[in-house]
Structures are given as C-alpha cells and as structure tokens.
Length: 470
Image (cartoon, rainbow, N blue to C red):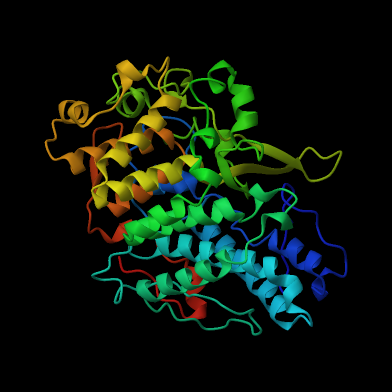
C-alpha cells in the first residue's frame, strides 16, 4: 500500500490508523481525497507563453526563469515540471489503490461511486501528463508519437519498468477511464462536491479532452450536460457586478472557494505561486496587459481589476497563498494555493470553439455575448453586442470562422491570464512564442521545436522511461 504524505488539508480529513485496510467505502473515499495532482503547473506553463515579459528584475526562480528561456527546468521542487510529474503519478497510485479496494470488496455495489471517482481521477492525471510531457495530440502522428506510461495497477515491486507506448494509446486509455467513470459519479457521495470529480467537473473535463482530440460533436454533448437546464449563465464568475465591488483581499478570498459556483473542481497545491505571481521577473507587464486586456471586439472595457506593485509587477487578484504552519506554535510551514482545475467559463469557451468548427455561428455568437455580458464594464447589449460584422472590422478577418475563433481565443486569454491556460491554446494551434530579454535578445519557440514538449524527469529513466529528444 502506498503512503501519501501531507493529506489534503482542504479536501478531506486524514483517515484513522486502520485506513490502509480500505475495507469500507468511507476509507476508500478518504484515500481518493489524494487522487488529484497536488502540485501547481501554472508557474512553468505561464512562463512559456506570450503572456509574460522580462521585467529586468524581480524574483528569479528556476521554475520561472528556465521556461521563459525555453530551457528544461533544472529545479525539482514545488512548481517545477518534475514536481508536477511526481504529483500526478502519486495521484494515480492513490486512484489505483482505491480501484483495487473497490474490485476486491465483498459487496462491490457499495463502492460504485468511489470507483467512478477513481477512474475519472486516474484519467485526468494521465491526461495532464501526456499534455505536458508528450507531443500535443495530432491525429496524423498520435499513433507514433511517444506517450507517457499509463499505470493501471498498484506497484508491488521496487523500480518497476514501464513503457511509454504512444499518444494515441494514452488517449484511448484516458477515454476508456473517463467514460466508464462518468457513468458512476455521484455528487451525493461528497460532503463538498467541488473538491472532487462531481458530475459537472467530469463533463467539463470531457469537453477539454474532446476539444483537444477535435471531436467537436462530443464537446457539445458534454458541455450541454454540465449544468441542469444547460444553465451556464448563473454559474459564471460575476466580474462586472459582484466582483466589481470587491477589494483585492476579498476577491482573493472568493476566487478559489468551493462556494464560488464557477469553480467546478478545486485542488490544493503546495506552491509559491500565490506569493510571487506578480513579482516573478518573467511575468505580466504593462505592455503585455495592454495587449491582453487593453481592448476587445465589443468596444467596451474588460471589468477585470488590474493592480500593480511598484512600476512593473502587474496582477489580476485571483490565486493567493494559504500558509500552513508546521505546528501550532511554529514559525515555519508550507505555502499552499487552491487552484481551479475546471470552471464554467472554460466549458463555455470549449462549446463556442466546437460550434465554430461545426459551422454553428449563431450559437458561437450567443456564447460570446453571454461571456461579454459578464465581463464588460457597464455592459449594454445595444452598444457591446458582438456580431460577425464587428468581428470582421475589429480583426480585419473576412472569414467568419477564423474571426469567431480569434475572438474566442482572445477572450480566453483574458479570462485565464496568469493561470497557465494560454499554453494549451498555443500548443493546440501550434503558435510560435517569442520572448525578449531586457537587453533585447530575441528567442523564438517555433511550432515544431522539440522544447515544446517538457522533458521527462531524469529520475524516471530508472523505470525504463525514455527521455524526450532535444
């Protein structure tokens, strides 16, 4: 039986001393509280994107510096790719032990909900691994591109050897687990559903998976099941109303809470991101925030509150640090950040993008206008309504589909600034990324550059896992 260190302080109580027997559904559920990658990918993912710039000074950490220069991250501690890799496989180990307990239970029917959560959690951790550490899914090459080891049973030997197989195989296994688990998920099984793969979060995961796979009809199918009566509107973040009246401290306290309806799945991560998000040397600057938040197709202004420390450290208040002391009287401890893994807004964007590719232009415009109604300051439908004519004029793009897609991607970039999502879109669309040093030196990460695939941790080679080419 594996040992999981640092049981999730926000999600579940640590099981009692007999938990390793896993002989009740409750004990299995407690183990599943650790079946989510308790590590943060935002630091290195955001630093690889075009959302950041060299400020010439600030906090210099390898997890922020190396990705900015498109180098393999030499650090192995929290916020590094290696730390994330290990956290994903730790989560997978917890899911596999939970599944083993479900399969060997005398009365399997009592463990149905636990089995569903374990399957979906296992699928998610593998999905994030293949997204970062393999070539991005491309149907024409997926059957030959190296994937990541898909682990389906608890380890029983030291230094077990694993095969990477292919991206196509990895995606097939993810889909198998996702669809099987989806049927078994029960929200009634959770005290706080948003800390687990509840039904809405599972459907949201499905929309991302099928969007990456370019199965657009399935994106629509699961997006439309995410909420009863397909009600995305009342489950979106109210940036231009309720949030607009909040101070940064209150937004920080609200953004990643389970009570915020936009958050479909939250996870606790050991991370310094909340402390340094604005202070990293390679981060959001005035020029970049102007590019992202300065104007948009509606003609109105985004309602996101933008703050800064000094003259160069810009941030939108979202994710903050929770410091957990080592003991009651201790002055040392560990920093944590609660991270929304899936949100209502992502479901809306995924649906809009799928509809754009399917030629359902009116549905795309409906979603874009819904989003704008929650994000534009003093929104007025007569003034700010998005039309294809407006899109053509703003972007200078005559092709309707291309214009709609550009609008979706730009809105998504604004919504998820400083959350790492931009990297996924740059990968999906094979967009080059250009970075400059404060001295003017230029670095370009082209579409086919091998460095777009994160390097497998060297420690994994002892298990027979081949490194990615460089």
